[in-house]
Amino acid sequence: MSMSESLELVSATKSFGGWLKRYRHHARSLDCEMVFSIYLPPQAEERKVPVLWWLSGLTCNDENFMQKAGAQRLAAELGMAIICPDTSPRGLDLPGEHDSYDFGSGAGFYLNAKREPWSRHYRMYDYVNDELPSVARQHFPLNGREAISGHSMGGHGALVLALRQPGRFASVSAFAPVVNPMDAPWGQKAFKNYLGEERGDWRQYDACELVVKGVSRQPLFIDQGEADAFLDEQLKPERLETVCRTNNHPLTLRRQPGYDHSYFFIASFIDDHLRYHAKYLKLL
Ligand SMILES: N[C@@H](CCC(=O)N[C@@H](CSC=O)C(=O)NCC(=O)O)C(=O)O
Image 1 (tube, rainbow, N blue to C red):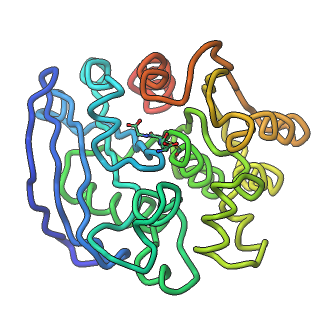
Image 2 (spheres, protein in one colour):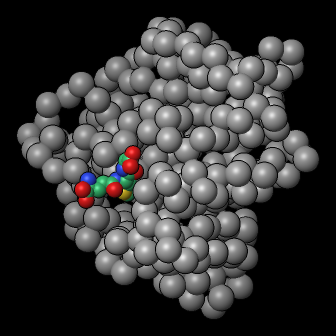
């Protein structure tokens, strides 16, 4: 990558004394144009700040979290930047790419595809883990401390990125994550089509398998709504609970009675997650 990748400002909106901005850039790892959102708190005018990466779920783009989670008020108070990548490559028209909500556009699953025709563009693991962080460090006043969180497919992404790379993120949390995608319909559809039939390739992208592998001992903080329509078929938090207990991996799993899978659930508990990350990011 060159020293200075160019960014095109799409929009800038003042919020709680800071700025919510959207930028377009050429993503080399995905070979397409991508848009991301960044919230810069007021403190970023004067000093470098830590960043929370937020990975969204199926059907989302970079805007869902910024518009619905209500995170800006506390992020401004804490002095925390937030960056939301999109959830898949965009602007392409691969065969079947736009046919379903749980595969293709809006459903990149934060992995590096191995199968054609996806492998040239669907490299969201590299994009969110390497390329976009590198772009962000070049262009924004970030102090090098990074945390990660996400929702559903994005919760899966956050857990996988953190569990594969001890020390890469100061902290990790998730809302209603897909914890065992190898054994859930969303994950099986994605893995089969993006990765192929080799189960060894699937294991690198499965939080339960990664806990068993034991590369990282980083604590996991998870909120799960008990009225989530996807709970039993797709999310299966009890699987993660079991492997964490068996492998002595630190897990805080909060089951929240009455809450569903929506951003109303995320908005209800986002402050707890921001404060959790703020401690590890040395803001509290
Ligand atoms: N369209 C689907 C469900 C899609 C859905 O619920 N998407 C969630 C993430 S699900 C897991 O990754 C989401 O965040 N949607 C965007 C939003 O702003 O709410 C269906 O109809 O079943």
